[in-house]
Length: 441
Image (cartoon, rainbow, N blue to C red):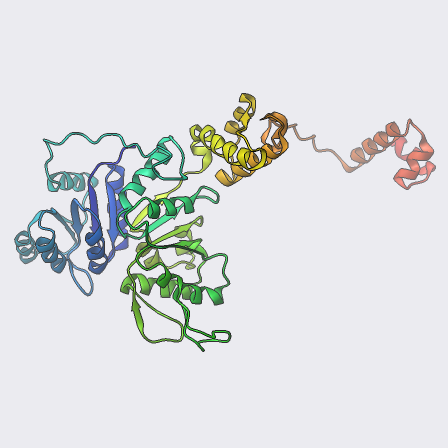
């Protein structure tokens, strides 16, 4: 899929409408940013190139009219599309004065939305069609290697967000390379000289996670013998990567939500807020939608984190990339363990391409590392673990009675002992008489 060049910002405090709009726009290959408040929308506008604003009018605190006025003066070239459930003549007139091009009333159909978006976007008849990106070049985003369509989509999204501070949520199974995506976003963009701070929310005890994230003052708790900055302050101007965000406790989630809303941090033991200016990239292999239903993850935090969402595909969905990844790991571990580049037999590579890789790239790397250690001149089938190779599924034996199973086992023991009844009775821990009786039955 080749993303269109247009970036569309959606602003609505109704989370259901926000998700519906994003789903429709993504199905037409537009790239979307989403905001649940005017304050968040202004933040996205300040460091992102936006081609169309879609906003609701009735929102708490600062409403959509204020946003329209702000955009009209600060970003006068951005077309505006209103989607509202409270239409009125006065609202329509005010919207037109603010330069609104299209006006949609809830509920609306998918086709009505598509028509309104096409009308609202500026006409670019004189522009050339977008050229295919070269993001699949392994030098473009450092460690991310691949030429499959799914990894190409990931690389396109990285290219869209690398130079702005929109909050990004990276999802995917364990071992797919979510941290590599976060690092690519940071190190390929204009903030690459600023700090990249990674925090594993699942690897730090709950009672220490708040101190790690937000910092603390001397005397705030036992062992706090000096003032200490948290990860938010340490990542100032750069990127804070929150790995395994689904493991954060509800108490930590509440504080994270406030930090993302207010753009300020209060250390434990302090009452003085500290302003922060950074980008947050969160990652999870959990199903956050399911956790929201189970009330173990806050819905409002999810929407704050997922202004842009990047789903990293599992390795089984990008088989074409396996040879490229194999070459990378063969080179890495060949140099490390053998002081030279190691090759792999075609048969061995075919086995790797056929396997389903539940552990994804991390499992593939471990297999290649072991194979390089075990091989002589090149990696062959004999150097691969047996569980990767072809297996036979024998049909289950037919169900039978306990008496038949017992008799079959007795006959098996007799065959193993050369029909020596005395030895067979000893193994079965029964008398020869009992053995003879059981054979008669």
